[in-house]
Structures are given as C-alpha cells and as structure tokens.
Length: 267
Image 1 (tube, rainbow, N blue to C red):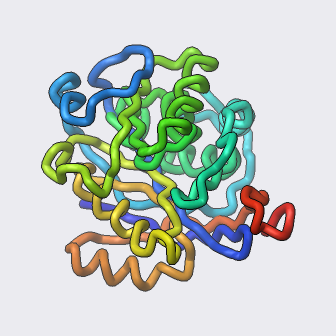
Image 2: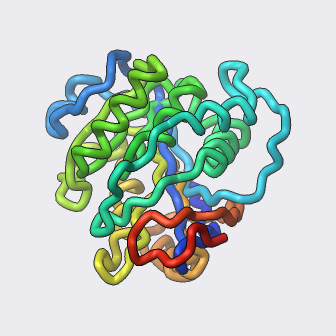
Image 3: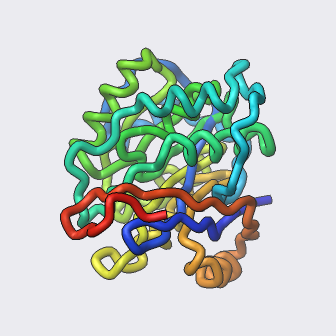
C-alpha cells in the first residue's frame, strides 16, 4: 500500500511549501560521486523492498529519544545544523533550504513510525545540498541516492558528505522532468523530497516531482507540500490511484534568501 502525507504548512517569504523525503536499502557503499543517470541502476542492481507514501512535517518536541543507530532526535538535528546550505540560491530552481529541525523531525518520523530508512534504498529528489540525504545516511539508510539538476548544489552536497565522512550516499545529476520514467521504476524502497513550490515560473513542478517519486518508489513516498495545495494533491492522488495520508503539519521560519524578500524571516 502506498501512503502519502501532504499539507504541511511552512510559511516563508510570503509563501508556503511542502517537502518530500527519501530512504532506501543497501545495495552498495562508496564515496559520493555524480553518476550517469543511465548507468546507476545497473551498477547497483537495485533491490526493492518497500516504500511508503508522502510525508508532511508537523510540530515535534525535541525529546531525548533514540532512533536508528542509537542516534537521538536532538543529536540528529544538531548534526544537521552543520550541513552547509546554498551559497547562491537560484530562484528559477526555487532553491530554499530545508531547516535542520524540519529535516530531523521528518526523518525521525519516517524511521520511528514506518521504519522506512534504516537498511532501505532511499532516493532524495531535488536533493540540493543534501540535508535530507545526509540525515537519512546518519539513520543508517543502506544507500541514499540524491538527484538534482544543479551542479553547484551537488558540489556542496559532496563537500558535506566528505565532511561527515559518509559513504552510504551517492549523487545523480539529471533533470527529473526529462528522466525516462522506466529507468528507475519501483527501484527504491523509499522516496523523500522537498520539491519546488510550483510557482508561476515553474508551474506544476511540484506535481511533476511527485509523479516521478511515485514512479520510482515501490511502495512509499515522503514529501512536504504547502497546505494550500492539499485538495489538489488529493485529487491527483485519486486520479493516479494512490492513497494519500497527511501525517503531520509543521510551520517554520524561512529566512530571506533572495533580494526580493523584504523581511529577514517569515514564520
């Protein structure tokens, strides 16, 4: 059964947004590198286990709770605070950072509630600088593969992975919208992501990411989306024959990232 949780409220710079996250089982381990999208599947000979729908982030207390690999929630968030974010975010790609708190709470929920990270083969779509992938790796994902179109973001991701000495992540540079839908069909146990808003410059991009994620995941996708799109996503889920479930809702401060942002933060 495919589970999806959508409708997280995240306000920032006058907008709300949602996030998807990925996690998968072990097929190999090596230092991160940008792989050719056509050869990665063959190289790892992906083994499918199971995946679980889309996730929304909700208010979570930073309790001193142990998760996979004996890592605690507060410890995970503390580690993710050291992950470098975008140096020069690109508005056309709608690049906004996923906060360490949101990333930690989301990954914690995926693992402790559904056990969809530890030992799983995970895909992180639109991975950016890698905060979700690195968090999944810290929670003992077998392998987390980050997909992104942006060279600069992947360079930062690579540096972050090297800084943390993480080997159970890999990187793929590609345009998800141009990806052959059969190349990774049901190849991942879990898909996680924080997709673009899908604003006027990239209208419908959030749905394109979601459609790709549902194709790639065998059973589950975890994602964040703006609350205003919940009904639309529910309709799309019905059209696609997918069960959607809202797991949690979360509001967070989004710091000003672009020149047109008039406030330092918006909550």
